[in-house]
Image 1: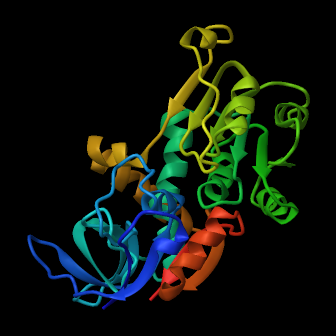
Image 2: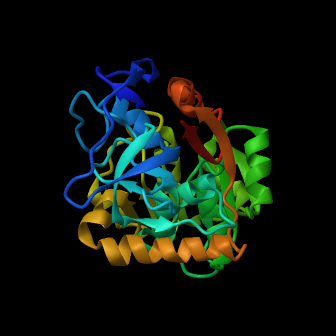
Length: 319
């Protein structure tokens, strides 16, 4: 079969389109014929071995796939070995996949896995948003952000402030439910966020950029405000935070990594929220933002575009 393999660490240039042996079913695992593979920002970190979990060479990236099982059932879910999704076939466990409703596309289903579950937990588990609270969403047109905005609106957020890098992305965020959208490149990002909230500080900031964006986000928190960090797309570290500095204002800085949900409680923190998300999409209450589709052989271009912020919504590879 054809697959994308990483044999040396680095940027998008290390993604190689190669022929590899088909995976063999074993230990209760089944071979899925992949019709679409999800691309996540974490995949770009995995390729350069800068992610939270260390990679072993060689490997096939991609943790989420949609396709058909040997019995013909159309499903979507996580790969069985934490990778292997960028391929024509992948190993999956029945416990880690769900049937795709007829009125839900592969891309919509894939958007609910890493990105949908992350959006769900950022608001429910980490930020513990309550109705009426103000929410700042960085990268608001990205895979996670484009789901956070409508979920926050659906669950009763107060003022939703989207942050995005282009005028088109800011318009998308407003169309999806944000009250206002501001430029991620604003020279005074802290001032821009507060101005967008009527001069007031904010209750919740969801942040995955790093560097100056993290610094500005912490600086705009209201009393008992929460900054939830779930990525570092810029590859830039933020200013170290002395723990005692959080006391004035009673601020919280919370980290989130979806893998921990899978380790701690795969039923309560993965399967049940996923059922909730699938139900919302099937009923029309939640509409994932479609993103670009790339042929499997062009995975390198997909990573280049993702890292350059040229994409919106769910990015997928199609074998």
